[in-house]
Length: 116
Image (cartoon, rainbow, N blue to C red):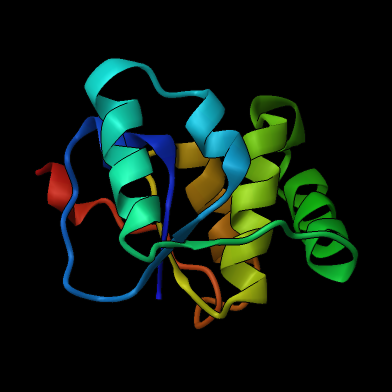
């Protein structure tokens, strides 16, 4: 499962794999990107609200990497969703990548090859 950050909607990322996101991502989007989020949600994109251990694990990893101050609440929750869903994070944020690298890479992998 691919867990989509706002950048995936902004850059029109596409995959045939199952997708997920969090409601906080929708709040970051406007115009066509927001419409795309809504359309994907309506067509079956999984919505996840992480809490508990995955969020604590991500916050701990962000403190360890020194990236906690750089990450928004949305970023932290999206990373936690990636861990909780055993998904692949689709994002272009370097601080998120640092934290994803700190946790088990099988659970959270920042994927930004699609930007190149």
